[in-house]
Length: 84
Image (cartoon, rainbow, N blue to C red; front, side, top):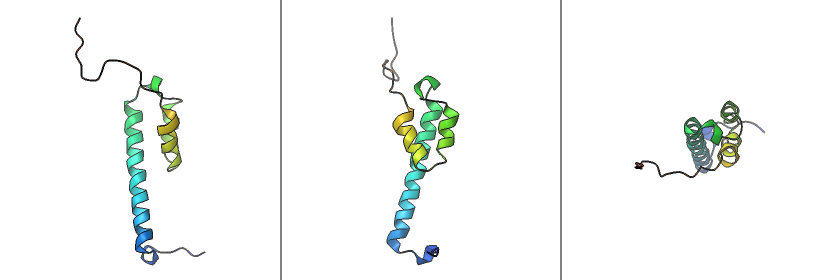
């Protein structure tokens, strides 16, 4: 099968590629932001390994978002002031 150029693709194929690419960018940004802010104790496995897995699109990102994060620990809501 010969490779097709962008011009040879149908408008529907072009749109699908653009939407899939945008979704990958958004998911990777969400995962990178989450792993940067999340404490090590709340990540299953080494953070560096998860970040490397993000290069395997979209599987690494989806695996981290599905399996790599521990559930949030209960605590006071963010932004509350504890008085005692």
